[in-house]
Length: 457
Image (cartoon, rainbow, N blue to C red; front, side, top):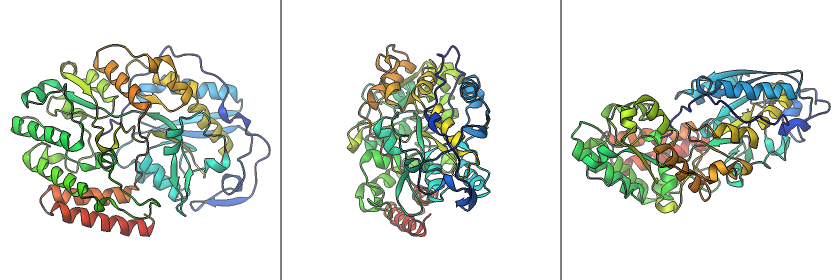
C-alpha cells in the first residue's frame, strides 16, 4: 500500500543549476501533420529521428497532489527553468491523484488535452504508452538515460501498441518499501516487532494473530487486494506474465492459490475491516486512529502519522518488509515524468521534464527532513545525505532502511494494465467474500486476464 501524499513545503533549498539536460534541443521543427493516439500532432513528435525545435513558448505541467505541500519548491524549479530559457512559460496544475486518475488521464489524452509534462504512475504509463500518447524517449532523445540508476531506467519501459518495450517515462522519485506498525497493538497480539517475518505468508500469520487478539476492536490491515497485486506476487517470485507479456501465467504457480486462500481466511477471521474490501482508501486514517496495526508500506507514511496523530506516532516503529523468495527488497516502480506525444510544444516539454528530473533538482527535493523519498539518479544517491543516515526516530530509521535497500533492491515490478489488474482483483474479492473457492478465483482471474491481453487491454 502506497501513501499517496507527500508532505511539507521545502524551504532553504540549495541553489539549483540553470542548465537543463534538454537544452540542446534546437533547430527547425518538423512541420506537417501526423497522429499520436488519434490526435493530430507535429510529425517531429512521432516516428524516427531525434526531437528538434526551439525551447520556447508555453507548456502545462501536471503533478499528483503536490501543490499544497511543495508549492514553494516547484514554483522555484519552474522559475529557474523559465529564467534559463527566456520566452518559456510553464503552467502548473495539480491533480488530486485519486483512484480514477488513470481513467481520467486516458480520457484527457483521447480528447487531445493531456498536459505537456505529466507525473504518472506505472499503471497510467502502461495505458498511455500502449495507446501511443507518450513521447518515445529512445528515439526522441537517446541520451535521456544518462543521469539515472540503470535499474530505475529499466523500470521506465512500457509496451507500445505492437508490444515492443520502449522508454516513455523518466524515473523521478521512489519511496522504497518497509513495514510500519503500531508496537502496542502488536504486543497485544503477541507479535514481536523485533522479529519481522521473512515471507509474505509469515506476515499473513502475524495478521491472523492480530485478528484473534483484537476480537474486532482493531485490525491488522486493509482488505482491498488492489494494494497487494502484483506487489506481493513479485516479492514472492511468482511470475505474473509470460516473457513477452502477452499472457498471464500467475495461475500456474500453486502459491498464488495459497495466497488467495490466505486472504480469504484473514478477511473471514476479522483481520481486515469488512467495509475496506472494495475501498480505495489506504490505511492512513484508521492507522492514525489506532485501529489498524500495520500502516502503509510507503516510508513517507511515517510523516503522515506524525502530523495527524502524535500519540500513535509515539507507538510507531518501522521494520524490514519480507524479502520472501525474491531475496532482496523490492523498490517497486517509482513515480515517473512523461512528455505527451500530443504536445504542441514538445521540445520545451522534453527540456523541462529533463530539467525537473536532473540530479540537482532530485537531490534538493529529497533532502526535505520530514519526508522519506529517494531519487533515481546515480549522482543523487551518492550524496552523503543518503549514505550517512543517523538517528533512532521512525523517520531516520525509515530513511536508513530504504537507503540500504536501494543498493541492491529489485526494481522490476510487473506492470499490469488497469483492466488486467482489476480483473485479478475482482476475482480475489469474490474468494474473500466466500463466493468462490481460491482455486476457482485464480483460474477465472487468469482466464479473464488472458482475454483482456488478447484484446490489447
